[in-house]
Image (tube, rainbow, N blue to C red):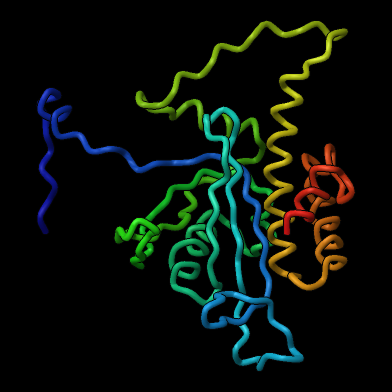
Length: 240
């Protein structure tokens, strides 16, 4: 078996260095729902009154809400089918390797992931052929603090420098900046939950709102700031 050549000259190594795989730290938001595949529409909610059960598939919508410390301000999202090789051979396999036995256990977990090729090609809006990627889970953490410590401890030289923490305000002074950051993260979660609920119940607004209420209750960071009747959430429903 051939072995990779080890470069012992640091100057030569620097000249030939390849970028490290991008790794991301954050919290998982995941939803699963039954669907059927319709030509020209893709995944549509499964209706037992209209669709044959042998056509039913399981849709999985997954997002990683990044840590604020990572410098990212948008979620990473992937939509897939549980019956696909992408899910079985890459995503779920990596989750099982970390000790997960049920998809429900994954929701809300603090994790480290990287994007890996699925082997599927697609053409983007610019007409360029691209290779699809998906999540491979590398680590799971017991808390946000543990996840953040891992993130900061492995930041590369190309990353933006971590801002120096400002002096802590006295207990008598409010800290709106910290609260605003947490609220912004909560809103990102809320937006994904609303999108998933509307996708699962496109013709039943009450059912979608019930799903949102249930999902908010599972996530204290969201329910701390929002309910289904909050103006921001009502605006999301109104956009549909």
